[in-house]
Length: 119
Image 1 (cartoon, rainbow, N blue to C red):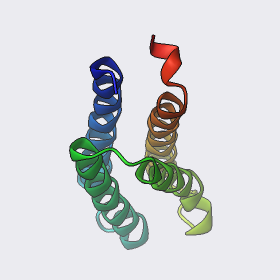
Image 2 (cartoon, helix red, strand yellow):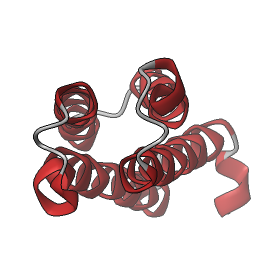
Image 3 (spheres, rainbow, N blue to C red):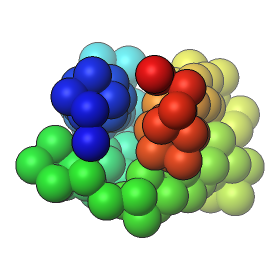
Image 4 (cartoon, rainbow, N blue to C red):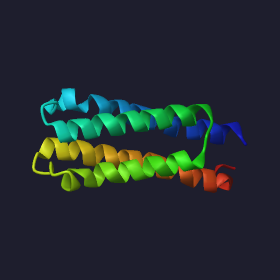
């Protein structure tokens, strides 16, 4: 595999790691640690995203990116499914981070399936 393609994938994994950290600390930064459902959602999904990002930084596996996309989709819909969409800041935090995770992971899958695009 060309090193340029590998570097691109690694940058997407670093992006997901940063997003995972942002999600994990968001209850303290945004101030919703007292709201247990969205806080625990952020902590659990943040840990899962972080673990997957660290795993893909060491050895790339396409399935990990697909799991990241599912987690990104979950972040987007979870404010409504878990009932905290009325808190605009908490909802936007989950939706924006979800969209970014989804985009970075979709980009990684696209790169993996279209290596000729980097030639």
